[in-house]
Length: 346
Image 1 (cartoon, rainbow, N blue to C red):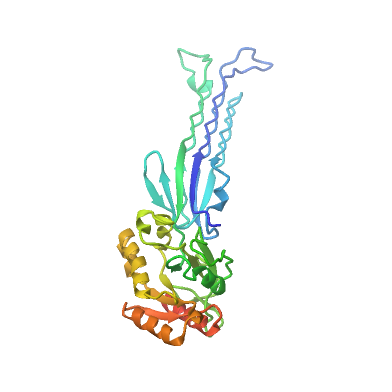
Image 2: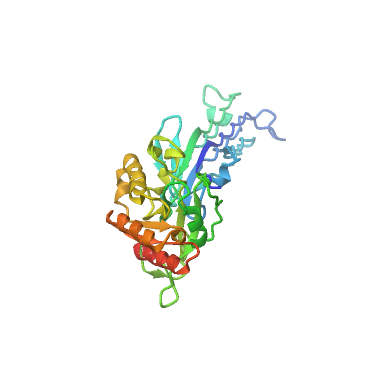
């Protein structure tokens, strides 16, 4: 199950307390103050990584706390600063501070300071003066920042499979990639987005060609070297942009895809109407989705006659998009689809 929405509390470390101490040794029974300062508490940073595909790590880890600074000690010994803590998040994670509603997105691997640790308190040696040569007090370490964060993942899949419920998206994902989604002949079998990796087409020199650039040997892209990430988005219905059905929760996942594959069941008698139903929801949610490269895919073509399939193709061809047909039992149709995907991505 893809985990794409987490409420996380982060707490930076507290500063160590300053020490109250006076020099005592064989030569001095009542020496001056020698209490050291406390160490600083650890900061908490957020950092992006392509090694993660979701937020599953935080499913049962609701609070992350950095270490506290070490208190100061006698003989002017300063407490050790606490190590900083780094939380690794997948690229495409939107981070929202629930207290201020400020938000930003993790787009690269540059560390972002999200909670600052408390400053270590000063020991009594810091407070001595000409008028107070034996201070009997020290400073308490500062409190580390605590923040409540909403983490929302808009995963960066290159290809998004969209369409009404039971349009064959999950079955298609299973044969194109290594994913094993739940498949059933009823609406809303898929309740969470599923993702899989489709091997990239091999170049004549044997290297894999990744989307958006030349052939690269051994490089790891967002989806990993030589693979394209494909996402099966749970079925949309009329009113999805207003929260109906599985609603707006999953529309966000197609905003960053490079290609949409619009799956339409071959048995639908009015495929053009089905197509427009989903397109209307796209426009209501984010009009930019209507401008994305798109392939219209008539699925389950083995369930109807060639004559009926021809009518479906003719009706959908009027939409000005590339129209393909497929069956999970027809290897040639799957090969044609893979080639069409590669043509757009490379």
